[in-house]
Figure 1: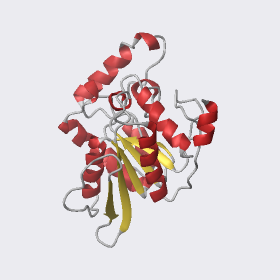
Figure 2 (figure 1 turned 180 degrees about the vertical axis):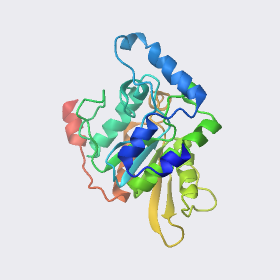
Figure 3 (figure 1 turned 90 degrees about the vertical axis):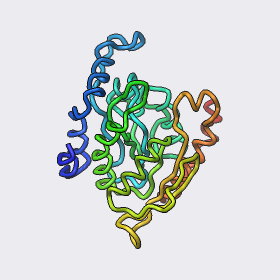
Length: 252
């Protein structure tokens, strides 16, 4: 698997190889069982039931790093953060920032596309209880490493502590300079990494609380907070700012 990831020539080949990965027996069994026993709300709908590749601009200056696909979201639709409430939040924020064509991402053929942004997950298969093991996170790491190498983003926006840790670990494996002491995760936290070590290009790491229902339903993460983090990441990536607040207010 490490050799397959490292030898992928472009994001298209990487995506194809990700989609057939069977490296983690527990995750393979879980994702396929969920696909075979669909939730009542989705009866009759085909489930993807495979790993989820990164999605969006193949040379995006902004790479959003999430945790893992949802059992009845990406694991069903075949596209990261698509078809679940967490996805509703991140795509709406990207749309408000002018980085997504639509404010929702419901299914793989809905016409959604990203501009200057790409989304990837630290773990590519849906895990039980949304919690991959340490070994599963390590097994998936080569996919993220190669994606970061191929995309060459200027900014990584980490959704949640696991994505933050995965981004820092990826940077170290790729030989980047990482600040000491280790940057701590927090909402709107920011760290400067250097691609290629001291003297290399700066890659900004921005943190955001994850868009999980646990955070959004309790108010730990609000739309304004998420917009601030996405806006910071977009500005650091050199993407043009677009304030859609008036459009959103009119729509409501």
